[in-house]
Amino acid sequence: MQPSISLCMIVKNEAPSLKRCLDSVKGLVDEIVVVDTGSTDNTIDIALQYTSNVFSFTWMNNFAAARNESIRHATSDWILVLDADEYIQSEDHDKLKSFLSQFDKSIPAGIVLTINNFMSNETDFSQIMESTGARLFVNHPCIHYVEPIHEQLISTDIPINWVSYSFHIFHTGYTKQTVTTKNKSERNMSILMQLQAEKKNDPYYNFVLGNEYANIHEHHNAHQCYIVSYEGTKTTDTWFNHLLDRLIATELQLELYNEASRHIEQGVKLYPQKADYHCLRGVLLEKLGFRKEAALHFSKCLDIFKQAGNTPYWVIQPSFGTTLPMQALADIYRRQGNFEQAVSYWIQALQQQPANYSLLKVCLEHWGHIATITNIIEDLGLIYPNSIPLNQVMLFKIALQTGNRDIAAYYRKNVSSFPIQWSEEDAILDRVLFPDSSSTLQTSGSKSSIPVSIAVLAAITLNDNQYLNPSYISDDAITWVLELQQLLSNRPIDLTKLPGQEGWYAELLLQLWKMQQYDVYYELLQKTANSPVLNALANLLYNSGHIEHALELLLLLLEEQALDSDALLTLAEWGLHHDNIDDAFDMLSIIIESQSNSGAVGLLLEHCNNSRYHDRINKMPIETFPNISTLYPNKLS
Image 1 (cartoon, one colour):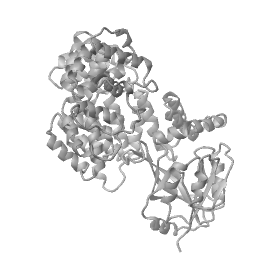
Image 2 (image 1 turned 180 degrees about the horizontal axis):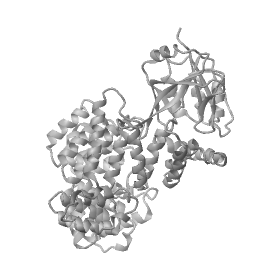
Image 3 (image 1 turned 120 degrees about the vertical axis):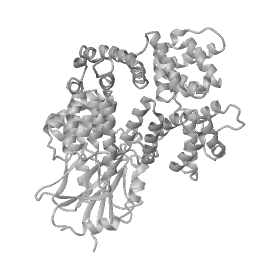
Image 4 (image 1 turned 90 degrees about the vertical axis):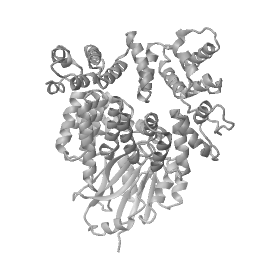
């Protein structure tokens, strides 16, 4: 006889996701127990459609107490614990029950399951971080939860016998929408602050606290917590691998490259046959400009993936062996001007990650420079079959964003008649790209999500000011737009209104260039653009594949001695790959002397580390460059 399973949940205001969770366990669980901690929506009504075992519990800022209340009501042999923003795989329920039947229910035992955490949105299976969790355990009187937050299971007498089993839980609670809607960080931080006095030196507590600081982008505080946790954590502790991953990510974010290097090397030693730390080593080297060496490590990640077969090739994220190194290699080749190789790696990444639409956009922006429209459309059809209407809609939207009129026209002839509501951004780009069309896209009328540069594009090219909404466009930005409209009407303007608007203004100019609005583009460029705008615009053009015009702007800024460090690095790197080594060396020297961009170090040492330049390199202050002092010596020949 197969064992019975009780699903035990604690909920509060989970109406949007609870039904999906409860539907997913049909056929697996024999009993559902729901403990509500104060819902004000229809969560309880939804729960009652599935079970009569719905109980109210006063919230005490203690997740363990609420969990213990839920398992107290369970009557089955085993207990499965899920949150409302989770659901389980739809297959192999019988296999799981057969596996459970092998255990002696009189002895505390638990099953560690795989948790797939969606990090982008709930439909993008390509943006997943994998973790494990103790979610299935024998309904034994000794087993209970401890710790007010990120609660842990323990047994009072006999230790729990933990066994891993390949059964997947899908978790959507880390998506941006969920985190924002539920104010999770604020709630969690409140609980953690109450525990700080008694747990300030506890390794696990500091790991959890560091995660919460990272969630609200307080990276310095997160790093301090991770360091305290790291110093007290053993490599055998269950949270160690995630701690090391988050510690390195934070150090890369804060440009603490010496520290990141030490921790990456530890990871490589612990897991030499896994892709994670080879990929992170490549990321570190790439940030420092050692692109050739970084490429070797990214290629090693792909080799590990290819040779793994059906065995896990990662520690934390599967993408460390696939899409991350593929995108990194594509970017390295893009910087060299080798669009063919770049597009090849982007296509490989899209085959692994078809829902990564920002990656698809970058790929299309460069693809159009090296292939015919017919070939591009044929190859796109292999990843996104035309037989699926939503694929055509998505490709049309991306083509609009890139300004590729031919590709957009191909998909437009089919999708413009589809009975769907388009976004205002789609409609604006469509009107600009196809001004002579007799049809327009039907929209919902919502303007709240339009980027500033798109709203201004409508005002400048279509004389349509309805999108200049003060609720999401600043008064200063609107003032500058009105000045631009005066300029295009041959009236004098006040150029003092520009400072502070350079970021979105550069994006507007990029949009005008991509949408082939050259007359307006050049008039605004020549009459209004200052050095910050030109520097930002040059890098935007360069990164979106418009190399020739980007180089024109970069050379103009060079003549005016107005290049910022990012633009100077871009021009120097182009020179390194196009037989202009001497000028590139001089540019990199300027950056290193000012210590304004650490990426110059690797480029100089990889391309100019020979007898011709060696004496000059030795006189440079590389050894004092912030945060990389322990990394450079072994790079000098």
